[in-house]
Length: 95
Image 1: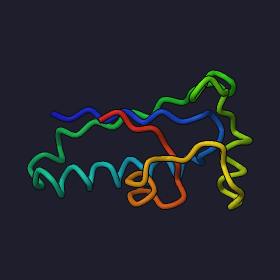
Image 2: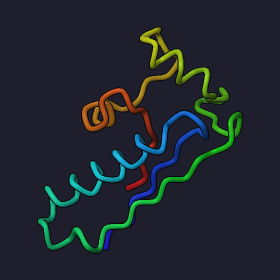
Image 3: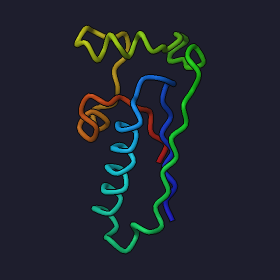
C-alpha cells in the first residue's frame, strides 16, 4: 500500500495545515486508485530542522518560505503540480 512522505521545514505549517495535507494526499491517491485503497494509505510528515535544507547549494530556511507566502519573489520555485494540489502550501513530496 502507498506510503507518502512529506518533508517540511520545521515550524512553518500548523498542525491543522499538516492534517489538511494528509487528507488531501489521501484523497488524491483515492482519486487515482479508488476508495478501496484508502485504508492502506500511510502519510508521514517529516520536519527538517531550519538550515538543514539546501537547494542548488543554497540553504532553504523558514524565512525563504515566509517571503514566498507573503507574495514576494522567491529564489526557488516549487513544482507547479504542488501549487495546484496544495495552493499556498509549499512542500517537497516523495511519492
